[in-house]
Length: 129
Image (cartoon, rainbow, N blue to C red; front, side, top):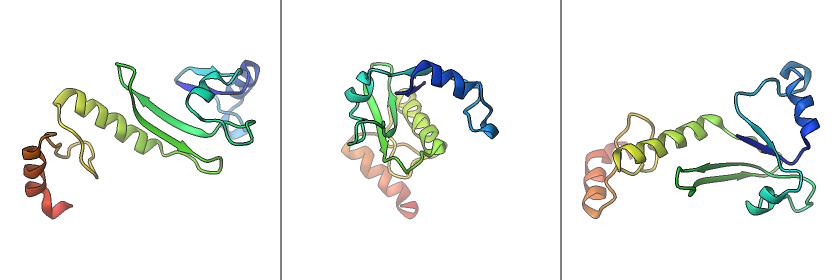
């Protein structure tokens, strides 16, 4: 879902305006209003001027644990391909019990989180590291 510190009326206007007309158009996910900035403050997302929220992405697992927190300063956009890769990594961990080493992508080998598992992974993948 998306969260914004803008009010509900702004969200309606943005969603009712096509992207090529300067809006965001229809969304396939909920867009929440954080008008009182309680969520923005809880995740430490307020810019130092306190009038803007930084751009951030939080991936939270089913137990409510933040697994990924990416915060971008105002001029920097996000990379949704990376967000999807991280979601794939979270699913891989949940289904396989293996962790995702540096450079992991869907279809690549995971690593058993033990001393032996790390040693085995490194030995088998040394040429790709």
